[in-house]
Length: 256
Image (cartoon, rainbow, N blue to C red; front, side):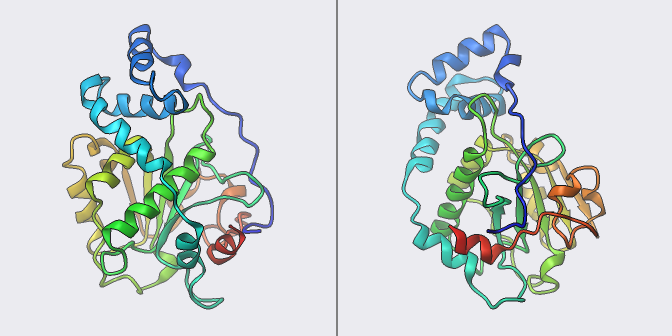
């Protein structure tokens, strides 16, 4: 199992209950062909200021992406490569506990953690898209039908030391951006420094549909910024003394 104990129990929210009558009518029309993805489509509509026409052209392609097969044979090697004791591979994962739960922030939002810099030298566009789809599907697996999908992101640069210092952050493709719109980050916490990462977020902030999310980034030199954001039970041991969520990337990959 990836962790030594299950994640804290989570009481799902009813985000759709807060919609206005007009918003509910728009959502009913937009999700008529995809009732299974009603909350996801609500996320799209909110990101596009409830403009049905703007959403119409991007919802179906994203749903097709989410439903396409992602073989575990393609996923597992990325997680399990390297020797025991080595720094974790540079990639993004959802902090699942191996018991059917997931680590969440203090508001109950699932945690996505990027270990190191996902670099253009290591990921081509097709492989990166496949990985993004897999991560999105894991987030949706822990999102109730009444919850608008979202994540709290932690970019952990400190765990890999200087390994990624000279690497170029991978900029998302159009399809990856569409996925990001569907599963927006409440906030992103960057722990550590990298010369190209601030510029990458500045570029993303210029994209209208992503601007607010790309600007909602906290840069810090340590893990101190995670205090009060992540409960101690969901802190990784190297984030905080006494952190109880003993997640191991390779054990996680082997358990899939």
